[in-house]
View 1 (tube, rainbow over the protein chains, first blue to last red):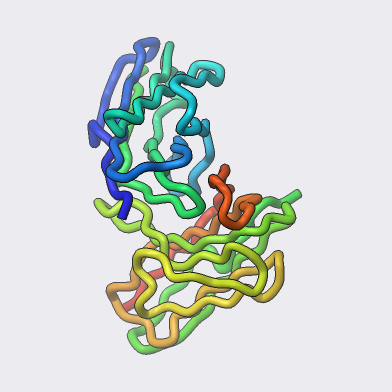
View 2: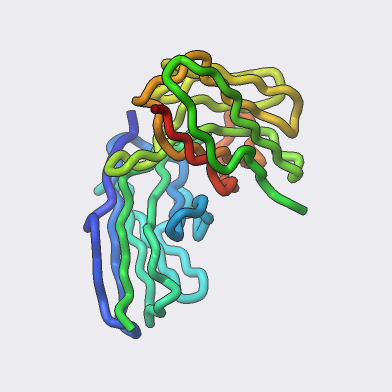
Length: 108
Length: 116
């Protein structure tokens, strides 16, 4: 199993602040992906980082990957109310393993 | 371009009843997946299909069967539903080169199943 976890489990911040969430995994992977889930909806892909990459940006999102520590982080800068959602990292290769996610609440 | 569609959106079953959850994608993807999501458990892979004609077990396959009917469609069947199968079921697809490094998965809107 390539189980790991996202942490924290829940995070509440003021609008405009930055939000950081982390993901750990246990076995080697080819890539790691971050997804967002709004309440009652399916997951939406945010960003994929490959094992030979250390950092990747997409708009207000910044993802880092540290393969020596088997961990990744997702930074959302200048948060907005619309960023309120659960965030999951998918670890693995052809098959992804997801943790329980980080529930992010942005307080207007 | 509808992406990944799932039917039905909601379903209530009695213990022992059977049903099939339908999933279709119009993106010409090779790989398709079925997950279940339970509170506090995250998403868990039930079955996946790396290509038309192949299926493989995931983390929690017991009590389920799947059929990859063609490249577009991947169905999940509960032969004899149990209350423990109350969950939200998501289908996903990815371009998925078999044996490749893995790529973005596109998720459907989910089916909310309650087994009484």
